[in-house]
Length: 135
Length: 318
Ligand code: B12
Ligand SMILES: Nc1nc2c(ncn2[C@@H]2O[C@H](COP(=O)(O)OP(=O)(O)O)[C@@H](O)[C@H]2O)c(=O)[nH]1
Ligand SMILES: [Mg+2]
Image (cartoon, rainbow over all chains, first blue to last red):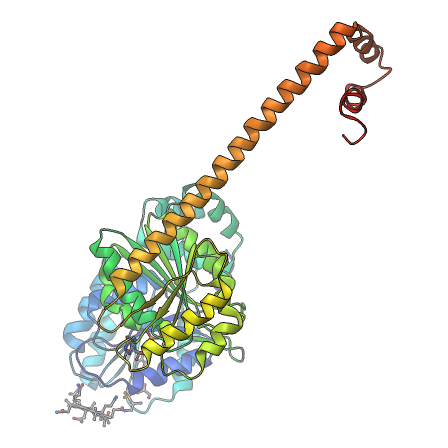
């Protein structure tokens, strides 16, 4: 089978905070890099995020969270992804995630975490280099 | 990725992951896309496909959210394809329609898919039609397609939808002029959304005035409805009208089919009567043997004899 013609990305905001500037900037940067970006809006439950990823058949899920709830929400999301068989999706995250939490989050299966001040071209490049090939 | 036949079987069983993969296959137009469409095609034709078009910001996505809820209350399953434009410069797209429908994303009776135009013109994507077939084959009772937002040439939707709803809202500028230019003819139902706004009634009257000039001899006269998508007001009435339009289409198809059947019966009857009258005549005149002999000796072919006999009976014009 030939490669995907477009990389499809879901940008989701789990939890209850409404800091959406970062999420929108990332969405725009990925779109400008030629990707198809689905944005869910604010206040998404883990179930909504995973169901959306499934219906939209995305290659990448980007989670943006600045509320501090990543330690409770990310494990639920990763678990649901496994339950639904979405194991070949690249998961990345950004926002306010303290340094000491990062190893734990990566162990869960979040491939990379980008904090405040990260240049968007670095994020775009990371996605291009790590997006799973569909065979 | 699983084999294409596995995906097709999954679609027919209503499996959500398979539906998603099938639509991707069609969008990417891979080598297997044709095979996939062929395998699901026999199971299509049950869903009612509704197109929603109208200027950006008129409230299409918000209205679809309420339309889905109404159909769900009536026990129907719903699939949605929401189309947004691909940037001609970067090839990327921001697909934001489903923000308005996100509460429904976990309802197992609903399947929502965002789709970029990938530079296909006409307000939808090239894959939209076959993606609608996937949702149809997967057993969705209703399939809703949201177009990019109507300009004047975005009339492709009528090739996909059985019922086309043209929506617009007061306060978006002189959009009635825009509708006049091209979208007018494709509407089966007009909706003036944002009825909570002051000049909604004027918009309704403007459209009705235009319709009076245009649709005098049409069998289906497009109704003009008012909705407030934010609250859901007017949505049950819209669903009723969509149902009426579907019935109208079914009756028309039935009439067409009965017409075709009657025609076939008439053709049969004419053949029977003309043939037996000519054969009887030949028998009476004792000429039948003579013609049969000519055919057996290959001196004349049956078609030429038939022509000759018909000309003799009815004159040269046959
Ligand atoms: C602006 C801001 C607000 C604005 C938000 C406006 C908006 N629509 O976004 C307003 C004023 C509304 C606000 C409100 C609040 N805020 Co505030 N806010 C900030 C502030 C100053 C900047 C955030 C921002 O927009 N940065 C700019 C963007 C571009 O950066 P970013 O989001 O970090 O994104 C970058 C990276 O993180 C990464 N990234 C982000 N998302 C993603 C996703 C993916 C997939 C990837 C790959 C990368 C990525 O890439 C981006 C580019 O580099 C931060 C402090 C800070 N310095 O971060 C506090 C901060 C986030 N807020 C905070 C708090 C506490 C609040 C309030 C609760 C305050 C209150 N008591 O009312 C409220 C909560 C409101 C709510 N309902 O959620 C705290 C959070 C503390 C925590 N997590 O422990 C912070 C950290 C301030 C602090 N130091 O205490 N806030
Ligand atoms: N006042 C009012 N605003 C509405 C109504 N329906 C939608 N909107 C708002 O109009 C904006 C555009 O809606 P959206 O559904 O995204 O429109 P679309 O671009 O046609 O899909 C949003 O801010 C909606 O909240 C309505 O009935 N009344
Ligand atoms: Mg929309």
